[in-house]
Image 1 (tube, rainbow, N blue to C red):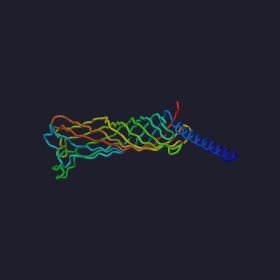
Image 2: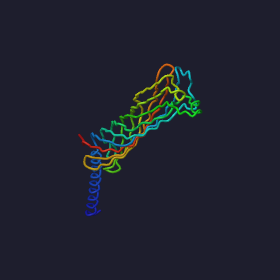
Image 3: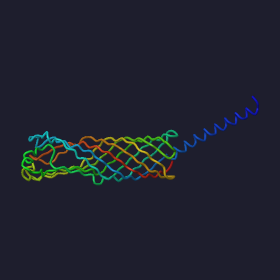
Image 4: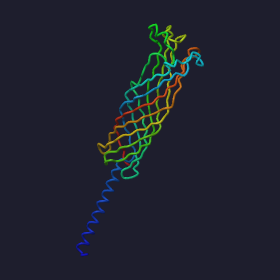
Length: 261
């Protein structure tokens, strides 16, 4: 092989090595740009599914739960406004892992239902009376602590999955005015119970860099929570129910990245 051919091969090999090295460096720089702590604000919607199931009507269920009205669904929807903070750690040129915590207030997430599930209103309804009793559920705030795993489709575009523990604070109310056949209580009753439910959440999102330290994101998450027992009133008016809340959350966020510190 001639000197000129050897020199050409050496030149091509050197150029190829430089290109590969440059590509690897650019990829590493791309993931490093996402590294470190960040904070953000979010706006979106929270949609809660709340299955209300009667457990007992009267002390020790002496009046019995009416099968025809044992269960009701109180679906709620409200605006969600909050913030989040987290930390990203690149583990390869295109893979990023991290932790994130968020909390948000929910506005307008209340649902009211006429009648109390499990109470037999058939006699009142047959005579044209409308139940005067009622229940309601309202979501006040939610929060989560989650792990994230992301993949860089592009140096400026990250797609990710997330999962962790979730919290949902809700207020439940029951009202029983004792107005004859349209209300089952012997005396006027009204009760309010606040509960913070603990559960799990899973979701996915996409985040794009729009400036050196700024990115925007869109995210969807589902959260399921443990059942909550609600005990209202006392004596012969005692009433007990169980709720099984879950939620769907869609958010849009604006994030500030502090950089690799």
